[in-house]
Amino acid sequence: MKYNILILIPIILLQFSGFTQDPDATIDDIAGIIKTGDSRKLAGYFSSVVDLEIKDTDGSFNNTQAEIIMRDFFNYNKVKEFTVNHKGSSNEGSHYMIGSYKTSTQVFRVYILLKKSKENLLIHKIQFEED
Image (tube, rainbow, N blue to C red; front, side, top):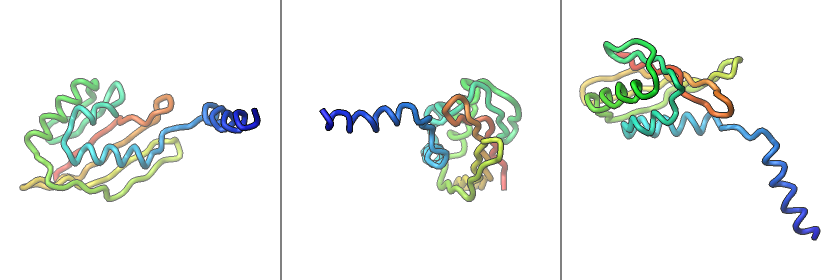
């Protein structure tokens, strides 16, 4: 009986501990997805509306439109290398990542802003600026 209680206590504590998503792990996941150029997986991290600044595209798009735009970008700008140069957070709970996206002919500076929605960090803004 004591053994069963000792097993149940940690399980119960985990359920009520307010366990939240690890920002560094989320950023690492997103970086890995960008390295593969998988717009569908990236869209799994989109908020319902995403601000995009990519080449000639600049605006707010629903997550379906944003996925299509990212798919086109990845198709026409095949990644050779993607590195995260910096990641951080604000006092308001936002998190961000700055990186370099290299193709065979161009280099883009990447900025991604994530904000908490319920217990998940979701992408609210993506910028790909030519370096």
